[in-house]
Length: 330
Image 1: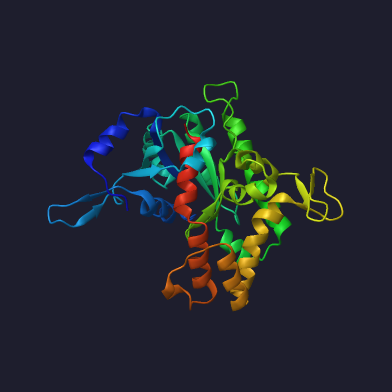
Image 2: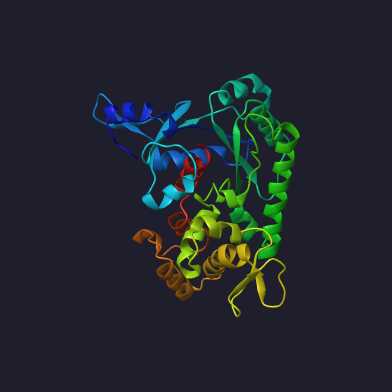
């Protein structure tokens, strides 16, 4: 939790360009509450009660969160007008029940953006589409987060290309809905979601891990001597890389692998495979190579519990989502 004074809160409130009002919209069983708890656990403001005990505002309708961007993250703001690197993010809860449409609309009217939570196994469902339509009508900018990736890996056992195509179809479905109800020439402009623009996240809200292309672009930036902002464009779509020739192309071919599969999914697949097949030496090597710090008490865990610990400490959901919110909703 983050502790700071009322004066600091008041100071941030004067910096209107550093305030983000967010809501989360989802199908009732897609893990909305868990996702909100991940963000709140990372950055929710705490206060001290009359008895001196620390209190959290997690149970209220609005959860204020404090987040400081690192200097390395600032270029991702691109042309946004900001005042310093400290942000106040107000996470506004909205009803899951579509029968409470008026309440959903009321909560959306005070938000700048909405995280659209989609189960990557079931895809975009009716309730999500309905609330997304409401959000667009209220000029709320959408951010897509595809969850339950752990189930796609463990239960469906999709290969890398199949998982990429699954993600691509969900993004296309989401953008069809956005295009149907939002005019590019309107006041919001083009608000279609795009992994290369940092408006799409992937992960598991249940296991508390998430990432955008940003995290992996930063890992490989030094290798390719390309700025992370530019490298993100190589990690999605028809961008293929040959390790043998050390070249990129847009058509693939012998020895060429899709950038997203090679540089994003492959490390995740290797980690999951090593954990689920009890390859303890490989797990230890990967944890050391990726500089993942897990609690001592978790090191003897196996299977899903170990996977959850490793993934949430490697790719913490709170970090990824707060970065997406601050960098894309200015």
